[in-house]
Image (cartoon, rainbow, N blue to C red; front, side):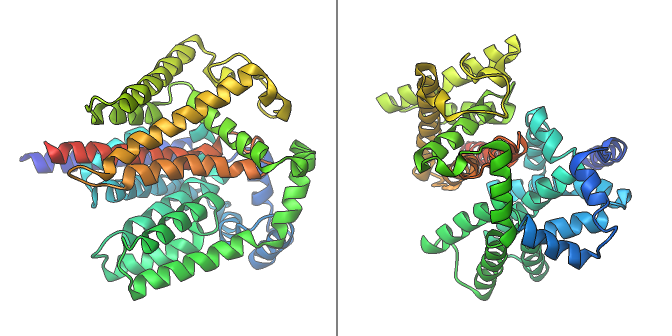
Length: 407
């Protein structure tokens, strides 16, 4: 038996074990959103429920309709959720390397499983969370991976457009796709065709439908009362600081392996003896040290590497940024962001001339900072950090791929 057959049987076995494990693990929660959506159609049909939610609470029209209509069928979501994970891993490989490569599918799968536990629990292992996060995010990365290809094929072209009907109704994935696709067209990195025009039109319509929902304003006002009563009085700068604070939370999560892997890949890339490289390497290395140190001490989650924040993450007050330690924390977080972006920009030159690391890391940080303009920035716990990790993994896989190609 040759090596390719062994590889095929090995991967098939892993997939079977993965599905069996997820089938046994996934369960509905007995409170909150799972119960709400389970009972959503007791007094309304699906369309009535979708319109009611759209008018009174959320613009996630198709996502909530899909969730309410399928949550009763456990076999359905026990198959769909792990399938979304596999689709996500394959799409990451196709974006990072240009095609589905088995080694990178396995590598990205491992990194996705190593996303900090608190993030995966809410965005992958929780049924309602999976419908709102990993499913639309996997469809968004799939659509983008097809959009980026020169030879798409008729089936993939149509499927990528259909996928937008779900992916375009999630705030983070919609912004992720809008930023990248419009930028690529403006920069003439994508050939204008009937497909690309149709892609942009469908994406724009879905996103407009999402963000212009009447329920968004109602929800924002209600959530502001519950979580941040003074939110609408805060300045834009302060809201940006809230977003940067959440970036700090992502950085400080215990043993954040995907982000640490990206940091190592970025440091190993450049050997030029420039002062900027030394400074950026020192800051990135300090992050790796702080993450491991605080993780081993068991204090990484709440300390943000500094002992200035209350352990209760749900009630952060604007005044915390006025303290010296708060300002040092924000400065350190911003320096880290700048260093990651700077090191990612170095890949624009050289043999491969790849924009992927810079675009992916930009989207990673933007996906968190944008949530600072919502009063639920802290109420959403850790699930809003899932897109951040997807972008980080895309950048990491692309850097590793370029390294292999150059050798």
